[in-house]
Length: 156
Image (cartoon, rainbow, N blue to C red; front, side, top):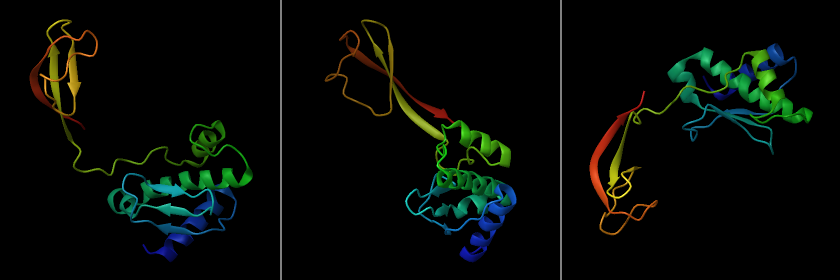
C-alpha cells in the first residue's frame, strides 16, 4: 500500500464509519516503532505504522485507522479526544476501533534481573542492574546485602 492508497482508505473509512469527511493528510511514518498511529494536534494530520499492516493484516490496521479518526473528529469538534475521556471511549466502541495495537516488539521476550537479600530485615530486592554490595546497603533498615541470584523472566 502506498501513500495515495492510504489517503483514500482513511477518507473512505471516515465517511463510512463517522459520516464525516477527512480533510487532512494521512501518511506512513517509518519512525513509529511501538505505536500503530499518531494524531497531530497542530496540523490535524495522521501518521500510521506500516508494520501493523504488514504484520497483523488489514483488520488490525483498520482498527488503528478508526482509533486515530476518533482522535481527529473529536478534537475538531472540541469534545474529549484523549484516551481517558468518556466521549473518546464511547465513540471508539461505537465504530469498532481498537483500543490498543498488538505488540510490535520482537526481541523483548526475556528480562533479566538481580535478586539481593538483606541480612538484617530479610527482605528481597529486585534490580535490573547489578551493584556493589560493599558500597550499598538496604534502603529500609541499612542492613548488609548479599547477592542471591540472577533470574531470567520469560514474558509472553
